[in-house]
Length: 452
Image 1: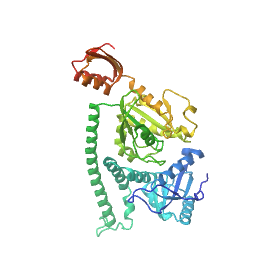
Image 2: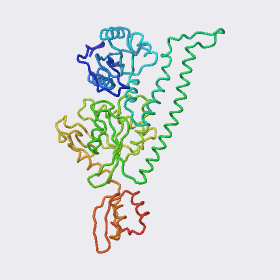
Image 3: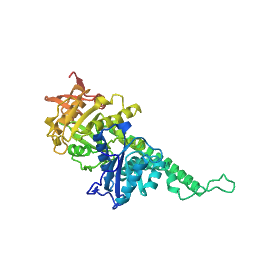
Image 4: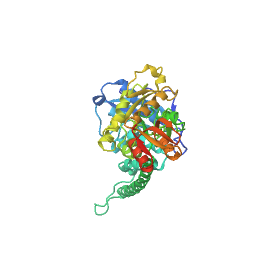
């Protein structure tokens, strides 16, 4: 790894095209990772892994990557972030490779972004802007698109001054009135603020609707199992393998964004709702942590949290730390119960790349699987069954053989362990959640409960 630019990447990397309105045709990009020695040390492997992640993010919006580099920083410059010599070297590389967009995998201030664009003579995007563009291209539901637009507007509002540099801040006749540039900026800020207010109202309406749906699920309660994990860990592939669904799943960062839910049947016959959520990523922009509150709400409502990890990835441990950091932040903000960690099962995915599930040690809190080959999926379903069973009550009911409604209710909502039919009545031993038992006994008051 060098302090200046690497050599060109050779064969350009072109991601799968998005919809026509989001596709950027033949746009050549350079990906730059500023790496601070003071903050990160000399961990070359970590720097290269972070650079490859930035390359994957950039490729996912259809840019042609012609150059990538790790740039070592002794200190962050307030004007351009990079040092003067590094900016000059980057400008020469941009010109030589005919680069249209430089992606800087760091958060830039509006001034730094503007100065770099002036020095390099091309468009500059920072990490936050890149992720916002990806989210904007992938969000499919109404709530997802509203949330992304809200995050975009908040990000753009602080950068409006860049859009109107061609209008000078001329003074009026008395020396205290702003010129046309200032007027246009204020007008745009006002329009953005008004749009943000409308978006927040729309989002509250959507959230109220989601709340009603959640209440409806509680009235016919099925346990909720939420998939969480670092982006590209294989959550959507696992979701499809367990549910038979066709949720979009590719070897691509942020392939899916909106939460998707499907019912699955466990080996015990019990039904649960499986929820696929957005992938986490290191240094996720704060605008998007708030924007994707809906996905986080699904995690907060979950009875079991499956933390899907790409165990074959060289930075798997660091990715785990990033995911747990977000969940811990949710707990600090009271979005997640403090005992959330007791509901987590680690799912070590992609073991096919390591030789199979048997190559990893078995523990109570982990399950080794391959969502692609199906290896270990039966063990995972059994583990979910086991976790849901914990805390359930075993109860025995005596009911008439002709009481098909009560019998069907127990089979649908509980796990029937034993049944003894007599001439006119039957004894059913069933395992039920406490709330299900209360609902059953309220609805079927004529049924006799016995000691299990």
